[in-house]
Length: 273
Image 1 (cartoon, rainbow, N blue to C red):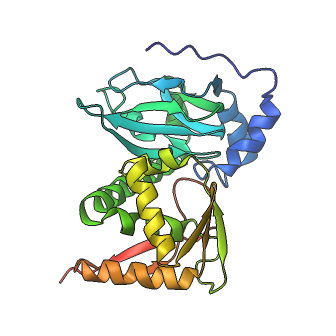
Image 2: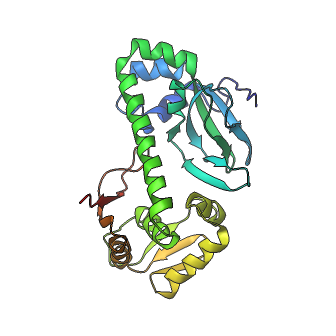
C-alpha cells in the first residue's frame, strides 16, 4: 500500500506539535531547540476508522506517534485469525524497530477509530541520529521496551489462560490496585478489540468476564468494569500464577508502554529455580 502523507494539516500547527512531542516518552526531557528541530521533520496523517497505515511487508517510511485515537498493530494468519501485538494510544510511539530493518514492516497497522498520527520519516530520522546521539539511545530504549512487551505477550499467550490474562489486564488498568474499595475501569476500546488483544474471541471474553462476575470479583455495566475489591482480584491472580509453577507473585512497579504514565504496572516475578 502506498500511503500518501501530507504536511501537518491546518488544524495541527507546528506549535501544537511542539506541545505534543514531550508527552511521548521518546521525546520527554529533550531541550526545546531539539524539539523544534524534530518538529520540522514531522508529517501528519488523519486516518478514518478501519483505515490502514501500513501492511506487513510494505516499505518502511518511518516510525509513528499517535496524537488522537488509536492504532492497532496486528498480524493475521492464513486461516484469518488475528493476533493483536499492541494498541498504540495518544502520545505512544510505535514502529521504531522497523527503522533498522530492510525487510519491511513486520505487521499490519490500522486505526480503530478516527485517528491522527505523526510520522517521523526514516531518511530524516537517520540524519537527526547522526547529529543527536542521545536520540539514538532513546530509540534503542524504545525498541527494548517494545521487545519486552512482545515477550510479555508471548508469556501471556503461552503460559496463562484467558481468565488469568483478563484478571492481569484489569489489575494493570485499575486506578487504585491496592484498594479494598470498588474501582471502576472504563474500557478504552470495544470488548471485541480487547478480546483480540488478549488473544481470544469475543464470545470467550464475555464468558470469562461473566465468571469473574459470578465470583463477585467484578461488575459490568456497558463498557465500564468495576473491580469490587482490587486487592481480592490481585490475590486471586497471584493464586493463579502461583499454581502455574513458573510465576509466584505480582508486584506494582514502573510504567507501561512507551509513554509518560503515572499508572503503576504489574510485573510478574518469575521463579527461575
